[in-house]
Length: 146
Image 1: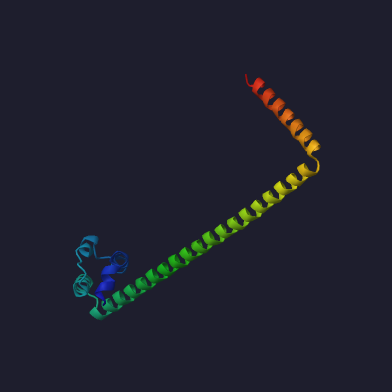
Image 2: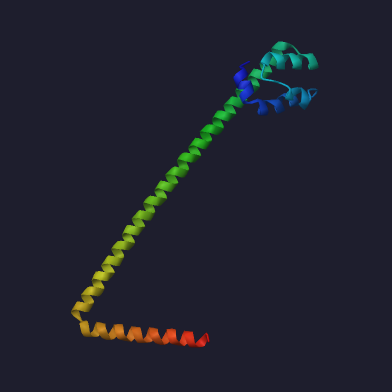
């Protein structure tokens, strides 16, 4: 029995041990200090089961828990990679959309500038009319809030 594995996964293993050997109390298992021989001796003393059977069970249990922990670690790694890729892709789409919008604003500004250069009098009259209508709307809204 690998004592480092036993110590590293003790909390997970303890429940499985109690499930297998219900006559062991939490207090008895709580006194365990990581010595595999001590644990096997305790189980053997309380249950009368053969040492080889106990050791085999504990080794299988420790191996299973180590495998589960490794799978969980791999799953977390994959989730981290997926989140990182999602953030990168989202940032890239945001930059592309920002560039597209910036280009649309530049084109609209250039078109407005050309229209003003071609027909300055009409452009001035339109700007004056829009300003007048906007002023009236704002004035009426302010008056209605009094």
